[in-house]
Amino acid sequence: MDYQQVAYLFAMAAGLVSSGAIGSLWALATDEAPNFRRLEDDDLYTPMRIVALVFSGPTTLIVESFWYLIDKPWLGIVMLLLGLVWSFIQGVFIMSQIFGVT
Image (cartoon, rainbow, N blue to C red; front, side, top):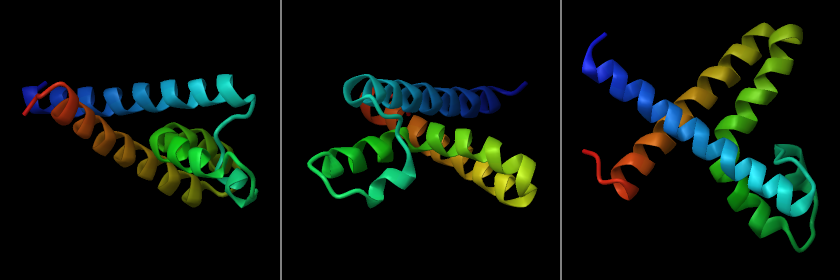
């Protein structure tokens, strides 16, 4: 395995871990799991819910994709790939901006 592949895998893992941690903290604080369907609700938590969904989006998208893999496989695969790409981008951002890895 090449070192670049390890770096890609590490970036994706960092994005998934941070996404899951933020989603778990949101669920612990508000007693609701982060979900895209909850954006339709207008209440006091909506601005914070948007921020939490942006940062916990990869994990939320991947979990939702597992339900669609059974019923609509093509949509599930697209959602899974989008979640992995989103987690990679989030991991690259975390590693470059927070830890200074270039």
